[in-house]
Image (cartoon, rainbow, N blue to C red; front, top):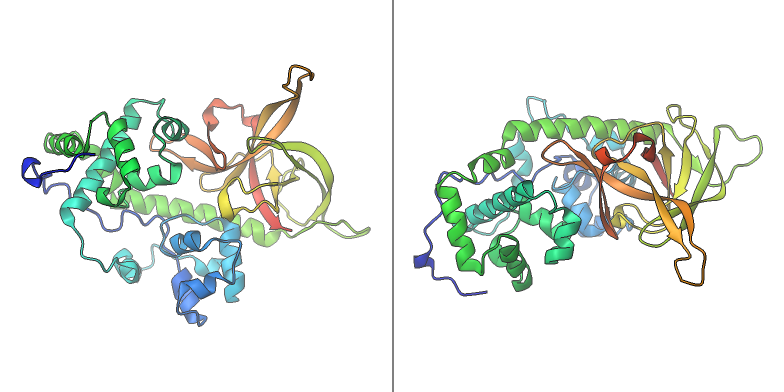
Length: 376
Protein backbone atom coordinates (compact mmCIF):
# COMPACT_ATOMS: atom_id res chain seq x y z
CA UNK A 1 0.00 0.00 0.00
CA UNK A 2 1.31 3.45 -0.83
CA UNK A 3 1.35 6.41 1.50
CA UNK A 4 -1.28 9.01 0.70
CA UNK A 5 -0.63 12.71 0.44
CA UNK A 6 -3.87 14.33 1.57
CA UNK A 7 -3.19 17.37 -0.62
CA UNK A 8 -3.40 15.17 -3.70
CA UNK A 9 -6.83 13.71 -2.87
CA UNK A 10 -9.94 15.80 -3.54
CA UNK A 11 -12.31 15.74 -0.56
CA UNK A 12 -15.49 13.73 -0.76
CA UNK A 13 -18.59 15.89 -1.19
CA UNK A 14 -20.28 17.05 2.00
CA UNK A 15 -23.57 15.83 0.53
CA UNK A 16 -22.56 12.31 1.62
CA UNK A 17 -23.58 12.67 5.26
CA UNK A 18 -23.19 9.88 7.77
CA UNK A 19 -26.23 8.43 9.52
CA UNK A 20 -25.03 7.67 13.09
CA UNK A 21 -27.66 4.94 13.50
CA UNK A 22 -27.02 3.00 10.31
CA UNK A 23 -25.46 0.06 12.21
CA UNK A 24 -28.51 -0.36 14.46
CA UNK A 25 -30.66 -3.18 13.12
CA UNK A 26 -32.49 -4.35 16.24
CA UNK A 27 -32.83 -1.99 19.26
CA UNK A 28 -33.82 -3.83 22.43
CA UNK A 29 -33.98 -3.69 26.22
CA UNK A 30 -31.07 -6.02 27.00
CA UNK A 31 -28.82 -3.30 28.46
CA UNK A 32 -31.66 -1.78 30.46
CA UNK A 33 -32.72 -5.17 31.86
CA UNK A 34 -29.11 -6.18 32.63
CA UNK A 35 -28.46 -3.05 34.64
CA UNK A 36 -31.80 -3.35 36.44
CA UNK A 37 -30.79 -6.86 37.48
CA UNK A 38 -27.61 -5.52 39.10
CA UNK A 39 -25.08 -6.24 36.34
CA UNK A 40 -23.47 -2.84 35.79
CA UNK A 41 -20.98 -4.25 33.28
CA UNK A 42 -21.56 -6.65 30.43
CA UNK A 43 -18.50 -8.87 30.96
CA UNK A 44 -19.54 -10.32 34.35
CA UNK A 45 -23.03 -10.89 32.99
CA UNK A 46 -21.62 -12.61 29.91
CA UNK A 47 -19.86 -15.17 32.14
CA UNK A 48 -23.32 -16.36 33.21
CA UNK A 49 -24.15 -17.28 29.59
CA UNK A 50 -21.12 -19.18 28.27
CA UNK A 51 -22.99 -20.48 25.21
CA UNK A 52 -23.32 -16.91 23.84
CA UNK A 53 -19.83 -15.46 23.13
CA UNK A 54 -19.13 -12.09 24.72
CA UNK A 55 -18.62 -10.37 21.36
CA UNK A 56 -21.97 -11.57 20.05
CA UNK A 57 -23.72 -10.65 23.32
CA UNK A 58 -22.24 -7.17 23.04
CA UNK A 59 -23.51 -6.84 19.47
CA UNK A 60 -26.97 -8.03 20.52
CA UNK A 61 -27.09 -5.47 23.32
CA UNK A 62 -25.92 -2.69 21.00
CA UNK A 63 -28.53 -3.64 18.40
CA UNK A 64 -25.91 -4.43 15.75
CA UNK A 65 -27.20 -7.96 15.06
CA UNK A 66 -30.62 -9.58 15.12
CA UNK A 67 -30.63 -12.14 17.95
CA UNK A 68 -32.16 -15.56 17.59
CA UNK A 69 -35.15 -16.47 19.73
CA UNK A 70 -33.22 -18.98 21.81
CA UNK A 71 -30.50 -16.40 22.47
CA UNK A 72 -33.03 -13.94 23.87
CA UNK A 73 -34.48 -16.82 25.86
CA UNK A 74 -31.09 -17.56 27.43
CA UNK A 75 -30.52 -13.90 28.25
CA UNK A 76 -34.00 -13.56 29.73
CA UNK A 77 -33.65 -16.74 31.80
CA UNK A 78 -30.42 -15.42 33.29
CA UNK A 79 -32.14 -12.14 34.17
CA UNK A 80 -35.23 -13.87 35.56
CA UNK A 81 -37.62 -12.28 33.05
CA UNK A 82 -39.49 -13.30 29.90
CA UNK A 83 -37.87 -13.06 26.47
CA UNK A 84 -40.67 -10.73 25.33
CA UNK A 85 -39.55 -8.25 28.03
CA UNK A 86 -36.36 -7.67 26.04
CA UNK A 87 -38.26 -6.45 22.96
CA UNK A 88 -39.16 -2.86 22.25
CA UNK A 89 -42.31 -1.28 20.87
CA UNK A 90 -40.81 0.79 18.07
CA UNK A 91 -44.09 2.64 17.57
CA UNK A 92 -44.44 3.75 21.20
CA UNK A 93 -44.54 7.56 21.52
CA UNK A 94 -41.67 7.55 23.99
CA UNK A 95 -39.33 5.52 21.77
CA UNK A 96 -36.55 7.48 20.10
CA UNK A 97 -33.64 5.83 18.31
CA UNK A 98 -31.24 8.63 19.24
CA UNK A 99 -32.11 8.36 22.95
CA UNK A 100 -31.88 4.56 22.81
CA UNK A 101 -28.47 4.64 21.10
CA UNK A 102 -26.97 7.40 23.29
CA UNK A 103 -25.42 5.02 25.88
CA UNK A 104 -23.57 3.21 23.08
CA UNK A 105 -22.10 6.30 21.46
CA UNK A 106 -18.39 5.96 20.74
CA UNK A 107 -16.61 8.41 23.02
CA UNK A 108 -13.74 8.89 20.58
CA UNK A 109 -13.75 12.01 18.45
CA UNK A 110 -15.43 11.30 15.13
CA UNK A 111 -13.29 11.89 12.04
CA UNK A 112 -16.07 12.97 9.68
CA UNK A 113 -14.03 12.78 6.42
CA UNK A 114 -12.93 9.23 7.27
CA UNK A 115 -16.48 8.26 8.22
CA UNK A 116 -17.68 9.61 4.87
CA UNK A 117 -14.90 7.70 3.11
CA UNK A 118 -15.93 4.47 4.87
CA UNK A 119 -19.52 5.08 3.76
CA UNK A 120 -18.42 5.72 0.17
CA UNK A 121 -16.31 2.56 0.24
CA UNK A 122 -19.29 0.54 1.48
CA UNK A 123 -21.46 1.90 -1.31
CA UNK A 124 -18.78 1.21 -3.94
CA UNK A 125 -18.38 -2.41 -2.87
CA UNK A 126 -22.14 -2.95 -2.83
CA UNK A 127 -22.34 -1.53 -6.35
CA UNK A 128 -19.46 -3.76 -7.46
CA UNK A 129 -21.25 -6.85 -6.17
CA UNK A 130 -24.53 -5.69 -7.68
CA UNK A 131 -22.89 -5.40 -11.10
CA UNK A 132 -21.19 -8.80 -10.81
CA UNK A 133 -23.48 -11.47 -9.36
CA UNK A 134 -20.61 -13.96 -9.22
CA UNK A 135 -19.15 -11.95 -6.33
CA UNK A 136 -20.95 -13.89 -3.64
CA UNK A 137 -19.82 -13.86 -0.02
CA UNK A 138 -18.13 -17.22 -0.49
CA UNK A 139 -16.49 -16.15 -3.77
CA UNK A 140 -15.08 -12.98 -2.20
CA UNK A 141 -13.54 -15.00 0.62
CA UNK A 142 -11.99 -17.44 -1.86
CA UNK A 143 -10.72 -14.82 -4.30
CA UNK A 144 -9.74 -11.92 -2.05
CA UNK A 145 -9.41 -13.51 1.37
CA UNK A 146 -12.01 -11.22 2.96
CA UNK A 147 -13.93 -13.20 5.59
CA UNK A 148 -17.75 -12.88 5.61
CA UNK A 149 -17.81 -11.03 8.94
CA UNK A 150 -15.20 -8.56 7.66
CA UNK A 151 -17.09 -8.03 4.41
CA UNK A 152 -20.26 -7.31 6.36
CA UNK A 153 -18.47 -4.68 8.43
CA UNK A 154 -16.96 -3.07 5.34
CA UNK A 155 -20.31 -3.03 3.50
CA UNK A 156 -21.93 -1.40 6.52
CA UNK A 157 -19.15 1.19 7.02
CA UNK A 158 -18.57 0.02 10.58
CA UNK A 159 -14.87 0.88 10.64
CA UNK A 160 -12.70 3.61 9.04
CA UNK A 161 -10.39 2.38 6.31
CA UNK A 162 -7.26 3.08 8.37
CA UNK A 163 -8.40 0.63 11.06
CA UNK A 164 -8.29 -2.33 8.66
CA UNK A 165 -5.00 -4.17 8.52
CA UNK A 166 -2.74 -3.92 5.49
CA UNK A 167 -3.88 -7.27 4.10
CA UNK A 168 -7.53 -6.27 4.18
CA UNK A 169 -6.77 -2.86 2.70
CA UNK A 170 -4.91 -4.49 -0.17
CA UNK A 171 -7.78 -6.94 -0.75
CA UNK A 172 -10.28 -4.05 -0.88
CA UNK A 173 -8.14 -2.27 -3.48
CA UNK A 174 -7.88 -5.45 -5.51
CA UNK A 175 -11.64 -6.01 -5.43
CA UNK A 176 -12.27 -2.42 -6.56
CA UNK A 177 -9.58 -2.75 -9.23
CA UNK A 178 -7.21 -0.01 -8.07
CA UNK A 179 -3.48 -0.38 -7.27
CA UNK A 180 -3.34 1.33 -3.89
CA UNK A 181 -5.06 3.50 -1.30
CA UNK A 182 -4.34 6.76 -3.10
CA UNK A 183 -6.03 5.46 -6.26
CA UNK A 184 -8.91 4.11 -4.20
CA UNK A 185 -9.55 7.49 -2.57
CA UNK A 186 -9.29 9.20 -5.95
CA UNK A 187 -11.78 6.77 -7.51
CA UNK A 188 -14.32 7.09 -4.69
CA UNK A 189 -14.01 10.87 -4.66
CA UNK A 190 -14.89 10.97 -8.36
CA UNK A 191 -17.78 8.53 -7.94
CA UNK A 192 -19.15 10.51 -5.01
CA UNK A 193 -18.88 13.77 -6.92
CA UNK A 194 -20.56 12.52 -10.09
CA UNK A 195 -23.46 10.92 -8.20
CA UNK A 196 -22.53 7.28 -8.88
CA UNK A 197 -22.71 6.41 -5.18
CA UNK A 198 -25.71 8.56 -4.27
CA UNK A 199 -28.54 6.04 -4.73
CA UNK A 200 -26.70 3.32 -2.84
CA UNK A 201 -25.79 5.65 0.02
CA UNK A 202 -29.43 6.72 0.32
CA UNK A 203 -30.54 3.08 0.33
CA UNK A 204 -28.00 2.28 3.06
CA UNK A 205 -29.14 5.18 5.23
CA UNK A 206 -32.90 5.32 4.67
CA UNK A 207 -34.47 5.79 8.14
CA UNK A 208 -37.94 4.79 6.91
CA UNK A 209 -36.63 1.60 5.32
CA UNK A 210 -34.55 0.84 8.41
CA UNK A 211 -37.62 1.23 10.60
CA UNK A 212 -39.67 -1.03 8.34
CA UNK A 213 -37.02 -3.74 8.50
CA UNK A 214 -36.80 -3.41 12.28
CA UNK A 215 -40.54 -3.94 12.58
CA UNK A 216 -40.46 -6.96 10.26
CA UNK A 217 -37.67 -8.50 12.31
CA UNK A 218 -39.56 -7.77 15.51
CA UNK A 219 -42.67 -9.54 14.22
CA UNK A 220 -40.66 -12.56 13.08
CA UNK A 221 -38.78 -12.78 16.37
CA UNK A 222 -41.96 -12.54 18.44
CA UNK A 223 -43.33 -15.49 16.47
CA UNK A 224 -40.13 -17.50 17.06
CA UNK A 225 -40.25 -16.73 20.79
CA UNK A 226 -43.85 -17.88 20.89
CA UNK A 227 -42.82 -21.16 19.24
CA UNK A 228 -40.05 -21.71 21.76
CA UNK A 229 -42.31 -20.82 24.68
CA UNK A 230 -45.01 -23.27 23.60
CA UNK A 231 -42.63 -26.17 23.00
CA UNK A 232 -40.43 -28.07 25.45
CA UNK A 233 -38.13 -30.86 24.39
CA UNK A 234 -36.81 -33.88 26.26
CA UNK A 235 -34.03 -36.10 24.96
CA UNK A 236 -35.64 -39.20 26.50
CA UNK A 237 -39.14 -40.51 25.87
CA UNK A 238 -40.44 -42.24 29.02
CA UNK A 239 -43.40 -44.56 28.53
CA UNK A 240 -46.67 -42.79 29.00
CA UNK A 241 -45.23 -39.25 28.83
CA UNK A 242 -47.41 -36.79 26.91
CA UNK A 243 -46.46 -34.80 23.85
CA UNK A 244 -45.42 -35.88 20.40
CA UNK A 245 -42.73 -38.46 19.83
CA UNK A 246 -40.34 -37.14 17.19
CA UNK A 247 -37.53 -39.04 15.49
CA UNK A 248 -34.08 -37.55 16.00
CA UNK A 249 -31.41 -37.73 13.30
CA UNK A 250 -27.86 -36.55 12.93
CA UNK A 251 -24.32 -37.81 12.64
CA UNK A 252 -21.52 -35.56 11.35
CA UNK A 253 -20.27 -35.66 7.78
CA UNK A 254 -17.56 -33.48 6.23
CA UNK A 255 -17.96 -29.88 5.05
CA UNK A 256 -20.55 -29.02 7.71
CA UNK A 257 -23.08 -31.60 6.48
CA UNK A 258 -25.17 -33.82 8.75
CA UNK A 259 -26.17 -37.36 7.80
CA UNK A 260 -29.81 -38.20 8.35
CA UNK A 261 -28.91 -41.14 10.60
CA UNK A 262 -31.56 -42.14 13.20
CA UNK A 263 -30.25 -41.50 16.72
CA UNK A 264 -33.33 -41.80 18.93
CA UNK A 265 -36.67 -40.32 19.91
CA UNK A 266 -37.57 -37.10 21.72
CA UNK A 267 -40.77 -35.73 23.23
CA UNK A 268 -42.04 -32.43 21.82
CA UNK A 269 -44.98 -30.49 23.20
CA UNK A 270 -45.74 -27.94 20.53
CA UNK A 271 -48.98 -27.31 18.72
CA UNK A 272 -48.04 -25.88 15.33
CA UNK A 273 -45.22 -28.14 14.14
CA UNK A 274 -46.17 -30.07 11.00
CA UNK A 275 -46.81 -33.79 10.98
CA UNK A 276 -43.38 -34.46 9.43
CA UNK A 277 -41.38 -32.49 12.02
CA UNK A 278 -38.20 -34.12 13.35
CA UNK A 279 -35.21 -33.41 15.57
CA UNK A 280 -31.75 -32.88 14.10
CA UNK A 281 -28.49 -32.87 16.06
CA UNK A 282 -26.34 -29.89 15.04
CA UNK A 283 -23.16 -32.00 15.54
CA UNK A 284 -20.88 -28.98 15.19
CA UNK A 285 -21.20 -25.18 15.64
CA UNK A 286 -21.54 -24.37 11.92
CA UNK A 287 -23.30 -21.09 12.80
CA UNK A 288 -20.78 -20.08 15.45
CA UNK A 289 -21.38 -19.88 19.18
CA UNK A 290 -25.03 -18.95 18.78
CA UNK A 291 -25.88 -22.56 17.92
CA UNK A 292 -23.41 -24.89 19.67
CA UNK A 293 -22.69 -28.38 18.43
CA UNK A 294 -24.66 -29.99 21.27
CA UNK A 295 -27.91 -28.38 20.12
CA UNK A 296 -30.87 -30.33 18.76
CA UNK A 297 -33.05 -28.28 16.41
CA UNK A 298 -36.66 -29.05 15.54
CA UNK A 299 -37.18 -29.01 11.78
CA UNK A 300 -40.59 -28.56 10.15
CA UNK A 301 -40.14 -29.54 6.48
CA UNK A 302 -43.68 -28.33 5.72
CA UNK A 303 -42.88 -24.76 6.75
CA UNK A 304 -40.88 -22.46 4.46
CA UNK A 305 -37.98 -20.60 6.11
CA UNK A 306 -38.33 -16.95 7.11
CA UNK A 307 -35.69 -14.20 7.07
CA UNK A 308 -33.94 -13.85 10.39
CA UNK A 309 -34.59 -17.47 11.32
CA UNK A 310 -32.79 -20.76 10.84
CA UNK A 311 -33.39 -23.44 8.24
CA UNK A 312 -32.25 -26.85 7.07
CA UNK A 313 -31.32 -27.53 3.45
CA UNK A 314 -31.38 -31.01 1.91
CA UNK A 315 -28.17 -31.75 0.04
CA UNK A 316 -26.48 -34.81 -1.43
CA UNK A 317 -23.11 -36.05 -0.20
CA UNK A 318 -20.81 -38.60 -1.81
CA UNK A 319 -19.09 -41.10 0.49
CA UNK A 320 -16.22 -43.42 -0.39
CA UNK A 321 -14.54 -41.27 -3.04
CA UNK A 322 -11.23 -43.17 -2.97
CA UNK A 323 -10.43 -45.21 -6.07
CA UNK A 324 -10.63 -48.43 -4.08
CA UNK A 325 -13.99 -47.64 -2.53
CA UNK A 326 -17.42 -47.64 -4.10
CA UNK A 327 -19.06 -44.23 -4.12
CA UNK A 328 -22.29 -43.93 -2.16
CA UNK A 329 -24.77 -41.08 -2.44
CA UNK A 330 -26.44 -40.17 0.86
CA UNK A 331 -29.03 -37.57 1.77
CA UNK A 332 -27.35 -34.94 3.93
CA UNK A 333 -28.62 -31.84 5.70
CA UNK A 334 -27.08 -28.43 6.36
CA UNK A 335 -28.17 -25.94 9.03
CA UNK A 336 -28.10 -22.32 7.82
CA UNK A 337 -29.07 -18.86 9.00
CA UNK A 338 -31.63 -17.17 6.75
CA UNK A 339 -31.36 -13.66 5.36
CA UNK A 340 -32.63 -11.56 2.44
CA UNK A 341 -30.33 -9.55 0.19
CA UNK A 342 -30.97 -6.01 -1.05
CA UNK A 343 -32.94 -7.34 -4.03
CA UNK A 344 -35.32 -9.38 -1.87
CA UNK A 345 -33.75 -12.76 -2.65
CA UNK A 346 -33.58 -15.23 0.23
CA UNK A 347 -30.27 -16.90 1.11
CA UNK A 348 -28.99 -19.35 3.69
CA UNK A 349 -25.55 -18.87 5.24
CA UNK A 350 -23.21 -21.10 7.20
CA UNK A 351 -20.10 -19.65 8.82
CA UNK A 352 -18.10 -22.83 9.41
CA UNK A 353 -17.55 -23.74 6.67
CA UNK A 354 -18.46 -20.54 4.79
CA UNK A 355 -21.38 -21.49 2.53
CA UNK A 356 -23.95 -19.37 0.71
CA UNK A 357 -27.12 -20.99 -0.68
CA UNK A 358 -29.69 -19.19 -2.86
CA UNK A 359 -33.09 -20.50 -1.77
CA UNK A 360 -34.86 -19.48 -4.97
CA UNK A 361 -32.64 -21.95 -6.84
CA UNK A 362 -33.72 -24.85 -4.63
CA UNK A 363 -36.98 -26.83 -4.78
CA UNK A 364 -39.19 -25.86 -1.85
CA UNK A 365 -39.28 -29.48 -0.65
CA UNK A 366 -35.51 -29.28 -0.12
CA UNK A 367 -35.95 -26.54 2.49
CA UNK A 368 -37.40 -26.68 5.98
CA UNK A 369 -37.78 -24.09 8.76
CA UNK A 370 -36.25 -24.64 12.19
CA UNK A 371 -39.00 -23.89 14.70
CA UNK A 372 -37.28 -24.61 18.03
CA UNK A 373 -34.00 -25.69 19.57
CA UNK A 374 -32.77 -27.33 22.74
CA UNK A 375 -29.29 -27.73 24.21
CA UNK A 376 -28.22 -31.02 25.68
